[in-house]
Length: 96
Image (cartoon, rainbow, N blue to C red; front, side):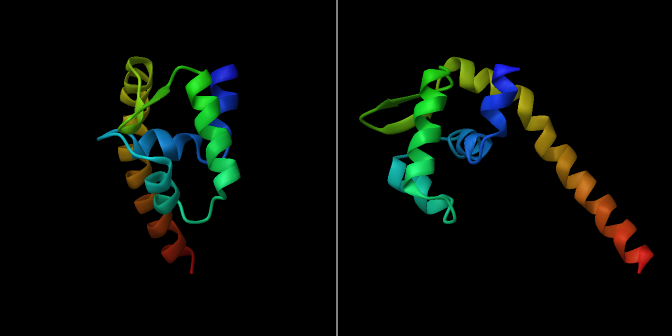
């Protein structure tokens, strides 16, 4: 339940998703999520670091081994959600 509590917080999943390809600085993460305050972003980064899902070095923030493993489990949800949105759109257009 602790993992789900962490992941449900604003920008937690978004930060994990953003860090899948390469390290990013906090400024780069901030620009990728324009609606979040720097205070919230920094809090999430601190929590994700405490959870050993991301780390920080001279290149910026990046996923740890545990973070990459978690992303591998979450990634199929991205594909599923695209499929789900298509179904929702079709349903809503049929309803009127």
